[in-house]
Length: 315
Image 1 (cartoon, rainbow, N blue to C red):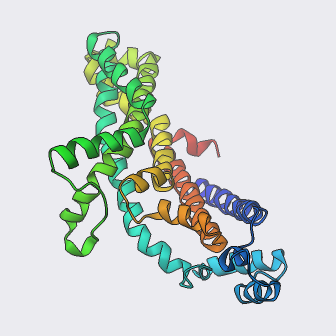
Image 2: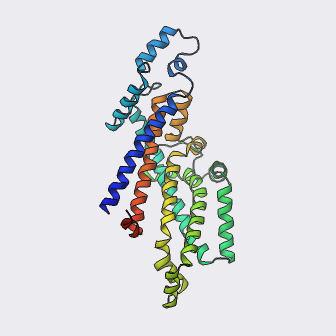
Image 3: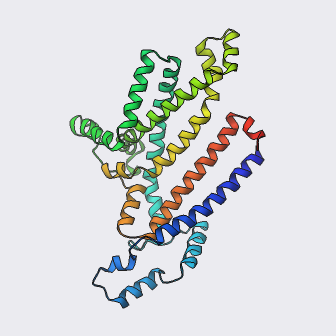
């Protein structure tokens, strides 16, 4: 298991190095100069040059890249061009919104998808299976921002059970703050739970047709007992993959939902920084999100080995 983990950790480091170079190059070649944008089109060239020197934009790109990577390795993400505040502090402030929202949405997605997928697989071809698959098809087809607007219309405007947007902060109390994230979390979770339920159903149906499942049935286990004792664990590998990818998406892909609910999260920070050409913020936030994706995939690989010991013997 240790050898397996070390190999995956080495792959993680290589992926991070490649990702950092790609992110830096892609963002640096984007059109528009931050200094010119901040000073306006009527700024004098000398003033622009002075601001570029102050922001460190006049040094060679390779030197800037190495300084950026070295700073991140030390926990220093640099200083925002626009707000003149440490990028790390900006990320930390918004992470307290985006991370709980992603975890909340992932928990809801899993709680919805697992029972739905297992129920559909256990009743293959029956009305219950057809109903679940129809609902998941609708969940996959409808975008999450539509769900968000419907939730606001029903539960915030008509019923007045929740606020229509904004985040009051964790200082007011855990449950009140969590309540303000409930509608955004549901809007994010519904499409993801539809995908996860379909994967769970498909994986379970593949496992139910395996020889060891027929052997379990021949030994006297009912279909339900064989499914819960032997089928579910073996069906988890593709499901774990989807859960890992979903967490990364929920953490990085909630830009539209954060805009709908006016949440001060990482999604809005990226959007605002791109609009202001605040390159250091965009690079650092995107790199952090890439790191989260790679780290989650690493943890999923370890979960594979825990679920299926055969994977450890193949490395």
